[in-house]
Structure formats: C-alpha cells, structure tokens
Amino acid sequence: MCDTCQSCSCDNVTLPVVTGPTGATGATGSAGSNGTDGVAVLHNDTTQSTTSSTSIALFSSTKAYTMPSNTLSTNGSKIILTATFSTTGAGVDGISNAYIYLAGSSFTSKLPPYQINHNSSDLQFYLKIRLEITRESTTTLAIVSDSYICTSDGATLDHYHFQEDETVADVSANSLLIECRGKTGGTITTFNCDQLTIDHLIK
Image (tube, rainbow, N blue to C red; front, side, top):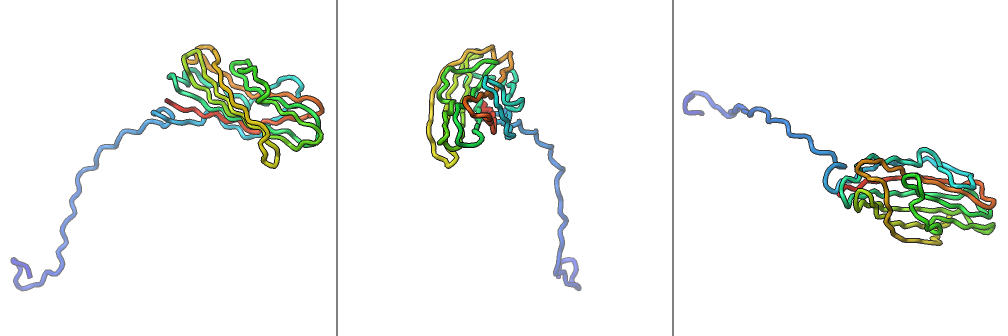
C-alpha cells in the first residue's frame, strides 16, 4: 500500500521517461587521403595489356596515369608505383624490356633491372617493378627502385635495387605523366603489362 491510498495495493509503479532535446549533428570528418599520414589509391588497372613492338611503345592508355598538379603538396609526400609484367609462352629466344616513363622520358638509364633475357630452354618469366617516388622539392623527385624477375614456378632469378634523383617540371603547378612502356626482341612476339597501381602517401 502507498501512503495516500490505504485501501489498495500498489505493487507496480511506472515512472515517466524524460529525455532531453536532440543534440547538434557533429561535423563531418575530413577525407582520409587529405589527412595526416593518409593513403589514397590513385590508379589501379588490372587488365592485361600487350605489345609486340620491337621499339619502345606504350602498352595501353590504361597503363598510363596523369598525376594532377600539387598531388605531392609537401616535401616528403610520395607515390608508390607497382607494375607487373609477363612474357607469353615459353621456349623462345628474345629480350623483353620494360620502361617507366615520367613526363615523356625514361626516368633511368639503368636498363638491366627491367630487362628479361630468355632462350629456348627457359620457362615463362614475370617481372615486378616497385618505385617509391618522393618529393624533395617542387622540381626534384627522389626515386627508389626495386625490381624482381622470376620464373613461372616462383623462383627469383634477379633482384635489383637502386636510387637516384630526377629533375621534373614544378609538381606544384604541373601534372606528371607516368607511363608503362615495353618492347620485344628476338623471336618473342608478345610482352604483357598485367597491372599498374599507383598509391599516394600523404606526409
């Protein structure tokens, strides 16, 4: 029984639920690629492109990327380029060469890292190139290159590592064209670029 009702039993008492007004909506967070230490995928093409040219030729328009001006907005910002290549078939003589072009010209004179030599006794070959391209100034890029050549059974034949600086047009005001090119030699008729991926790392 309650104090005001001596003749009844009040076993259950339900109290009213009182809520305050809805709070203000919070601000939208910044996009990850624009934040400190953000990462963005700028380009990722996985369609196999081929060339049978005996002179240096672009694989296809999808194996090229135009980086907008000021993408590398601060010194220390970088892009990471990963490109994979393969020869078609086995048991043929020839040389397959891959090239990475920046702003219309080959960024390096070091050909052996990107050169596959094969003869009639060889298996199919695969080549992977990974470049770290870091802004040192608006006109200077530091490039670190690692490349791997392996057979179809996974055995690594060669690994090359080198680094150098490249002078380019002011990246704060100019776009930068990046291309995968290749050529064949001997009796090799087809050389493939299987993937081009470009990631952006924000400092």
